[in-house]
Amino acid sequence: MCCFFIPTAGAAILTLTSAALKNNRNPGVQLFRRHANGLSKLLAGGSLLLALEHIWHGEITFHFPFITAMETPEDTAVMLQELADVGVPMALLVTFAYITFSALRSFFAGHASAARDLSGSAK
Image 1 (cartoon, one colour):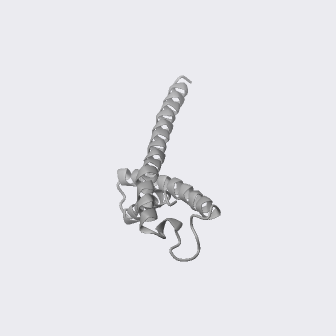
Image 2 (cartoon, one colour):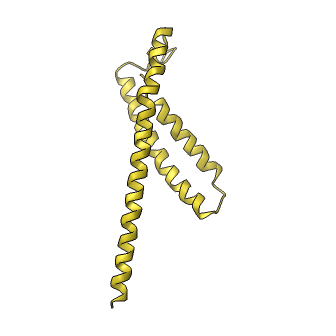
Image 3 (spheres, helix red, strand yellow):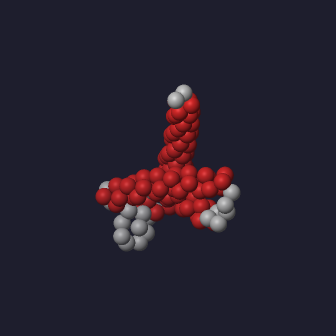
């Protein structure tokens, strides 16, 4: 129904946080901003695809109330349950995957630069 709202909210929060920290020149803050921007794009892109899929299946309409799950109070309760059961784990899984791959990339980049330093000093 609208499980993509949670990742969309996460992307918006990360984007606003990154924008607020734009003028901070601390290297740690700049590293956070770079990762926040990447994760924000990942969350927003996935949310956009999910929104298009929900439009395709008629769960989102272009007339009030826009989300078919908000037509009755019973449907709204189901929608809120879906937000908690699907939207939150989906956003957490994407965040965990991004953090894991970023850590692996940094780890292997560090080993690659160490190997270059060793081979450069052997010459």
